[in-house]
Each structure stands twice: as C-alpha cells, then as structure tokens.
Length: 393
Ligand SMILES: Cc1ncc(COP(=O)(O)O)c(C=O)c1O
Image (tube, rainbow, N blue to C red; front, side, top):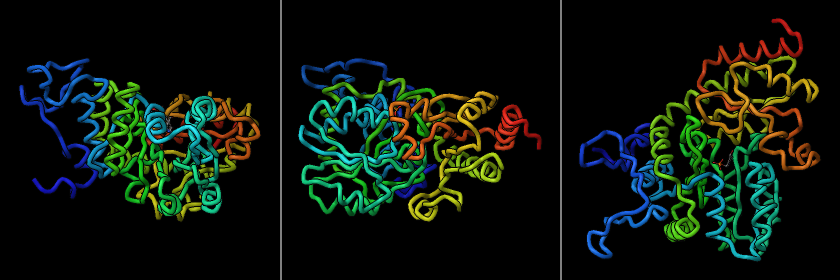
C-alpha cells in the first residue's frame, strides 16, 4: 500500500491507521464495550488497563481523526465541552490568563464565566479578527489563545496563521482553534500554525446526530501525554459505543462536506437575493466582508450560514416555526438541515446588549445546511415566507 500520509482525505478517513479485528476479520472495527481488561499475569496487559484511561474502539476513532489532522495521535472526549475543559485543566493554573474570541459558542463562554473563573483563571473576550487587539491583550501570564473560526453564529473569521505568529512571540502561549465548523478537511489549523485543534465531533465528524463527542489534536507529544493524564484522572474519555458510531460517520466526512458546501452555497445565494432578507453571513459570498480570508485559509466555505430578515423578532420566530423541512433544533453538521435562533438557544446566556454588539441580534437565524436537495430547502423557505409575510412568487 502507498504511504498513508499521501492519501487524499476521502481515503484517509476510511483506511489510514485502520485496525482490524483478527478473530473474525469483520470489516467493521468492533465495539469494545468493557470497563476493564484481564491481566494475563499480574501487571501484564495488552496495553489497556481500564476504560477511563483508554479503550480500543475509542482509539480507532482517535486514529482516524489523527489521520485527517496530520498528527501522530488525537484524543477523544465525551463532548466538545469535555475536550475544551480537559484542555484548560491540562494547561492552566490559578493566576493564568486566557484570550478567547468574543464571538464564540455560548457553552465555551459559560465555561469561563461560570466555572473556570471561580478557580482563579482570568480571561478576556477579544475580537480575534483584529490582530492588533489580540497582540495588545497578551499579558505576561497569558497561556492560551482560544479562537473559534468561523465563529458561531456570525461566521466571523480569524486569521489563524497571523494569530500563530502573535502567539509564538511569547514562549508559553499556546494557540488553540475550535475547528468544529470546518473540520481539518476544510481547514487544517495545525498546518496553519495553531498548536491545538479542537473539534466538537458531535457535529460534522459524526454527521448523523447520533452522538456527543469532542477531540483534541496537537503535534506536541508532551501535551498529548498531559491531556491523557488529565482525561484519565477526571474521566472525560468518550464512551466506546459513541466512538464506534462516530467512527462510522467519519468515513463519509469528505463526501458529506462537499455536498454541505455545495448546498449551503446555493441556499446562501438564494437568500441573499430575497427582498425580505437583509443580511446573509456566509464566507463563500463575495459580499462577506472576510471573503478573501476565507479563500486563503479554508479549502471550501462550509455548510453553516446565518441571516437576518427584514422583520420583527416575532415574525422571525414565526418564520422558523413555519418551516416544515428545516428542523428547529440545537446542534449542526448533520445530514438534516437544522435551524436555530441563537439569541434564544446557544447564546441565551449573553446579555442583549452584548449580543447586539456582536451581531447576534434577536432576529438572527442560524442555518446548518444538510444534505437534502437545495431545491426542496428553498421551496420550504418560500412557503414559510408566504405563511408569515403573505409573499407569493
Ligand atoms: C463551535 C462549537 N464548539 C463547541 C461546541 C460544544 O460541543 P459539544 O456540544 O459536543 O459539547 C459546540 C456545540 O454546539 C459548538 O458549536
């Protein structure tokens, strides 16, 4: 077989680092649903001791993720939030300071406001698209720059290569990127210079709304060992069955992403032309203020977009309720098109003033474009416009 490192992503997710089950030669790697492992004699194991530390099925998923991240190893966690929390527990001490993107998943800001802040971790939310603002926010005690790009839910982009340059002027400052919206298939943040790639595997990696999970990947093997220790200590490893489901999902990741990108592009262009739509945030549109950065940094534009209607908040919520095909549900990155109102869902913990300053107004709609035909999705929007605004086309 040719060198696995030279495989294209669609081959890597199926074949790279693949382990086989030797007893029956089943084509699917089995689910090792076990808490513990037998010692052949005292202290002699096959490398697995207890499933809070490691499990072969979790390991199989980790190898598939490592293949697309381009790292020697990756680690899986029981949620994206468990991955971020483990990263913070592994790298931070009381008195340390963290810089985070100000437009960021609501759970990540809640982790700092309501949990880590209580343990003496200081933090600043900064517009990480503004490189000067980031550079001037770094303090001697800043240890982590945690960036989400594209950011949830405005799709605001941050320049990973430029941020890596800023971070690496400081010997102890790590750059971590929440790459959930893109995955390494569309944006390899480690290649762009980040130290840590974080994914909520709940989203595109699984792709079928079947599991909750997260991952971390880095070239820094010392950090990998520290993350393993903290994960084993606090018990944040992903369960084997969930890892097995995500392992089936990841095999179609590049194929699904290509369709997500195509569908989202068509829906974004249609929405942008609609007279009742005031703004569409989609990095693939020429009108997107950071379109040029998206072209430079991403391999494609992804399946996520957000938009606002020329309407009251009440009309906007009624519009969401009137959709029949697009499902109103939290989460993203699955085969089903999911729609949310971030102000009342993922970002409800932020004050109305802050949300409005960040572009997350009460009327913002976030759309995770699925794998249905865009013809049917657009027809669904048309009927919802007609219900709420009486529009006929
Ligand atoms: C960008 C982003 N990061 C992290 C998370 C948290 O992941 P999980 O729900 O798997 O804990 C989410 C969840 O929606 C997210 O959208």
